[in-house]
Length: 550
View 1 (cartoon, rainbow, N blue to C red):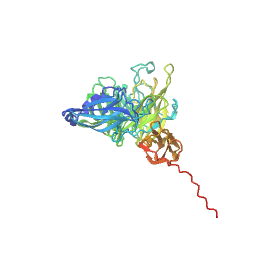
View 2: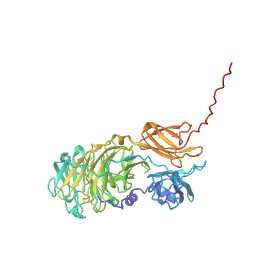
View 3: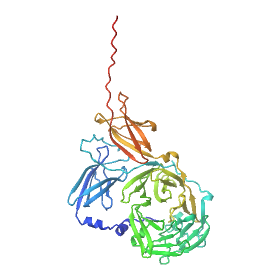
View 4: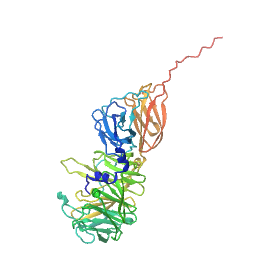
C-alpha cells in the first residue's frame, strides 16, 4: 500500500494531546544551546539535527556546530542524528527553566568513522570534561551476498495460484503493470492464520477468499465497499485465535472483525487521521496499526467502538519496540526502542549490494524480528537486477536466518509478505496472468554471524601525551590495532571477557599495561583514557668484585 505523508500529524493530533503537554507550555519557555563536536577531534559538526523526545522541536547545527532550542520548562532528552554519525545519540536530563538559557557548551558526538579532516583534541584539563552524547549499542552485521542472486522458485514452494476472474480461487486483476499503468490493481493484502490457513483480500471482487494450508479454495465472504467502488487501500490480519480483521480506508476508515467463516462480529468507524494506516498486525485480538513513521497504535474493537492506545514508538517486540529504516545506500538500521522513545540498540546491517527499501514483516514466536530488504544493482543504462533479502535478526544483534528471493511486481498494490507461525515467510507474487502465494524458509546464518561482536574503544596516553602508534592487542582473539596520532583506538571483539594489552611503540623495557574487558554482542565499551605503564630504568651491569688472590 502506498505511503502517505500526512499520517504523523493526524495521529499526534488525535492521541498525543496529553494534559502534561498543555500544562508545561502554559508556564513559559527557556532555551537550550550548545556546540556539536566530533568525539576526539576539534572539528565541529554542521548539518546535524537535535530533536527532543516527546516534543515537536528540532534544531539543525550551523557551520560552527551551534544549535538552539526553545522549550517549555521541564527535563528532556535530546536525540542527535546526522550524516556520518552513530544514529540516535542522546543527551539526557537536560533541565529547562522559564526565562533561563541552558548552555551545554561543547557536546561531543560519536562519528560512524573517524572524520578525514580530524584535528586531534588535546587531553581535557581537570574539571573541563565536555558533555559526551550517549550512543546506543550499535552492533554491525554484514549481510550475506556480494551480488544479486535470488533463489529460483521450486514448484513445491507455491502454496496457491489464482488467475483473473470472479470465480472460486480467482482474483480481480486489472490494468497492465508492465506498461506502467497507474491503475493496475490486484489483491492489496493477504494473511496467514492458524494452521497455515490463507486469507486473500480480493478487493476488486469485494470479498475475502479463504484457502487451506495446501492452497485449496475453502470459502469466500464479502466485505463492504464505499459507493460501489472497490476499496484499494485495505489490509487484512488474522489473530492467533482465528479472528479476521479487515481495515478499509475509503472516505471513512473502518475496522471490521469477522469470525473464520465470515460472520461479522464487531465493526467500528475510525477517525479521519487513520486514513494513513499502512499495515495491520493482529496480536491476540488486538490489531496494531503500523504508521508510516514507524509508530503504531494498539486498537481494540468493542461494542462502544474502537479504543486506541498510542502512538507507540514502533512494532512491539517483547518489552521493546522495533523500527527499521534505510540508513543510506549500503546500510539498514534496525532500532530497538524503550516505551519513551529512547533508542536502546541500533543494529547496523551493512550490505555490499545497494539497498533501495526496507520493510518490517513481523516478530516471530522466538522474538526475532523479520524484515524484508530490497536490494538492486545495475546502472541507469542497463536493466536493474533486484532481489529481496528476508532476514531474521535477534534483539541482541545476531543474524538468525536469511534468504534472498525474487521481488514481486512493484506496480501491483499489495502487502508482499506475511509471517507464518513457524517463522517462514509467505510472499505474494503477481503478473498479468495470475497471483501466486509462495513460501520461503529462512536459512540459518553462518556460525560467524551468530557470535555477534562488540566494540572496545579508548585513548592511550604515555607520560601525559597521546601515545602515537601504541599497540593494542587481544592475543586470544588474534586482534591487534595501532593507536591513531591522537592516541585513540577501536577494536571489534566477539562477545566474552578478554585481556586487552597496551604497549608503546617499540618493545622497550616496560611491561605491557593490561585490562580485562567484558564485551557483549552489539555493545560499545569505552575505556576512556588508558595510561601506559612507565618505562623501567635500565640498570647498568656491574661485574662482581674480584676475589682476592691468596
